[in-house]
Length: 444
Image 1 (tube, helix red, strand yellow):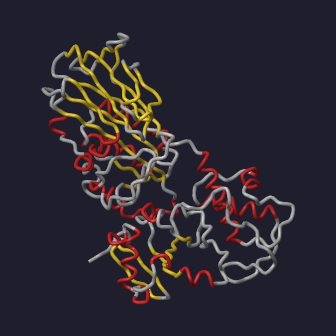
Image 2: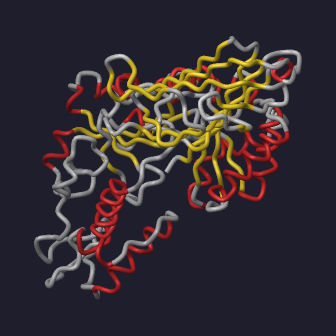
Image 3: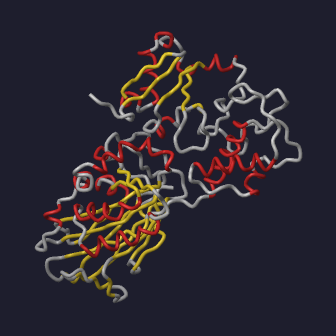
């Protein structure tokens, strides 16, 4: 029997390592239970005294960091090994100022306005190997930080970002390598707060009645996670829904022809489809800590403020194969030639920014719970296709082996019809009233 690295999780405690089923550790309570089952000394240790540490792929911090209870559900699917220690032992250790301390940037309770100490207090500070590091030139330190970002395919910080992180001071003493990494973390954390929020891009809605329909209404209802950012043609209504001021709905009234031509009843504009875009609501939304272990298991309501693409629910492709793969997948999802062409050409410029792309299509049930669509008269078939994608750095390809294998499988493109929930035969039947929508989002 063979095992994928993502089906097991290595737990290490006091020099002993045990591989446990990853599914048993999907929650913080689960990993606590697994640790106590496999390590006798932990059975009577209070939960608050057990500390989990790990290296997290995708972050510039290369050493292990403490994993808070809140962060564990967000990273448990990509971590390969976890080191277990006791808080009481950490407090008596001489390494209390290491990156694994309470001030780690990865703890969701830490304050970004009070970063961990950047400079050592004296000349006795040492590197992880216990060797004193010679004083370095400021230019060398800056270059080290830039190299960290380059290795992660992130834009290098400019001098202003480095200065704001506390590096460019008049007096520089023994600057340890690990401290340089922490500075890079501070820059990345501050930069992420300035990054634009991901937006749902170009969902377009096609209507194909079997005969001319003079009065068709299409209503979209967003949960409080969304707010409309662009709509065409102008809808009849765009109003707050119920008592939730951040929730919105809109209604179009159109005449529809069998060839897909639509005439907006309000403006008289003739269009091929109805267009809308939305951005995540500025109000914070409580995260859903559950994660899918396979693409088809993700039936939770989609949260646009926290889109996720991970090795367990996606496929990984080199950029040269993405367009061909998308054409095959979209054909299996019942998109006609024009829709497939529009989809690929719309997203291609963003996809080409990456050498490797991980992508997934959301189950319709998950998407529908976030963006409800009501059409009257009721259509016979509704097909809603929504893609999430992200770039994957070359250095992280090993962690995405499961997604790469899935893409190379015999049904590597066609299996998405089952994941999304598409009846391709009915969706292509010209004798039925069919509705088709496609859209997507880049996970940044």
